[in-house]
Image 1 (cartoon, rainbow, N blue to C red):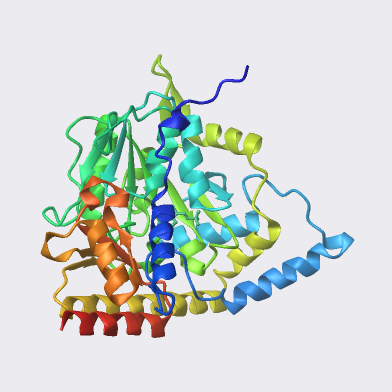
Image 2: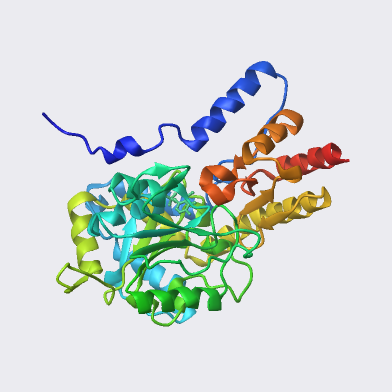
Length: 409
Ligand code: PLP
């Protein structure tokens, strides 16, 4: 008899976006003529950069000839992409990363979710609250979170990020083995300054804590003082793994490519206290369970770093950030309190009049036909907020704000 991993059974059966879809479907049935504007799910809407398309076309042509065909590639990724990443994402910021420290993947979600494979089941976990659900759910699956009690996992340390602390997490009240930090943040759209991030690196150095740093939205940073990589902080290579993605940087949500940096000096420990290289373990894990990202995707990702590619993706990011600006200004004019949206494509909107996240969601859906994501779906501290994304089409974004202006008038 095969036994299941019963930790999976602890996961809540319904998923936030499924609940939203159900409510939207009900609305559509009862209001067939209403034009809905979607500002909820964090997917991009603009096409790939021409430089990426050209590179992928060339890669497909190579695949069509025996002499230039590519079969299995290196599990860690092709060196042409790893070299471009090191040169453009790290060297340009004065960070030294070796080729063997970069692992190309099919995106940050897989890596954030799979990294736990190389860590013991009984490590203590800390997350900022609200949080990107993958960090929690993947640890539920591994048995690290205890049980769900009143919306919180009993063995997870939740670190509140609220308007009261300006969405800057305090250090945890009790020591944690692993902490997940995501900056620029999904869902709040807020960031950490260098000094604030330094506090976390120093905490990790002093407490032997491993930091999982998710920088999937670093390309949206506009303010030159905000760190793009945790490795901008001295000592971080001893304590942090960094996740990156081409999804939001370059519209690769449907192409799939990302990467993870696991520094060689980063160690975790055996029960006997022996230090073990996480780089070696992750390499072993990837070689066993992953067969590389497609050659075509990796050639596309390489083109993101070409001079034309850089210009083109910058223009798309500016397009989304202009949406964010229009949304921030419009929502504020409507008397709503808005956070984020300055260095991230997400806006974190406080529900007016003490409404709950779901009540605010329904009000927007039924009264202005706009879909957001209820903040409470990202954790208890998300209650009373709604996440809006700036990934929409410009005309729809403007129309949404116009509807909101009329609605609040
Ligand atoms: N990390 C965060 C914080 C995200 O919001 C997302 C996607 O929405 C991901 C990772 C996953 O990105 P990818 O498409 O590379 O799997």
